[in-house]
Image 1 (cartoon, rainbow, N blue to C red):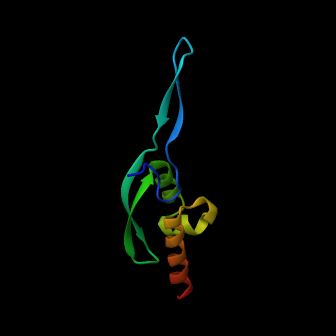
Image 2: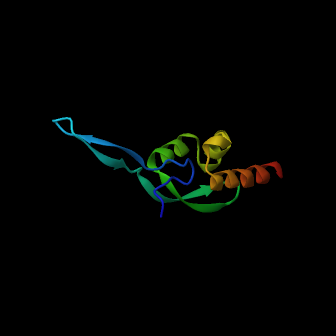
Length: 95
């Protein structure tokens, strides 16, 4: 399973360990991905996602999953998150 955030797409980055002698060896920086269940008030259900903890902090700051998705540009969201955003917009416009 990919080490990728299902909302923002944050994934593995690569870099170097640099020793005292300045020898560089390759390493990878894994994002802290957690399985979380988030409630969508507009859809009236809970959604299971694999989210980076950094994204989770942003979701909480924006007031939940609905606020995060509606306030974030589509270019910064993964396709699954864009699909959720469309469902939320459709549900809210029907009210």
